[in-house]
Image (cartoon, rainbow, N blue to C red):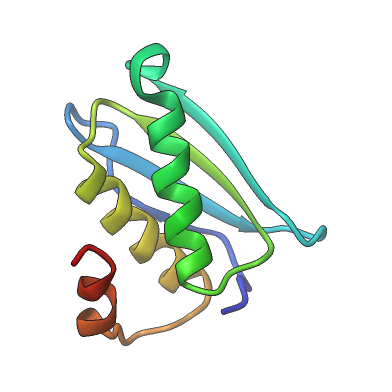
Length: 102
């Protein structure tokens, strides 16, 4: 999946995360994280975002995440939504995505 435009999913409300994605000219996944729980969970948040992006087949993207204590399932859902919006995809294969967590 190719990122063709900027996109956002989520909010900065408590227990949520706002994921902003942008195209990346270099072939890498770049993640910038601002989190109220970064010391405790920053590594796990980055891991969930990166694994989700890789499972979607994205190889070049800049991600900015502003976390307010979101659970892993919320982080994954916001990342999926932002990536699909940025790639101009309007359909989801939820069965495939659901199998990731099985």
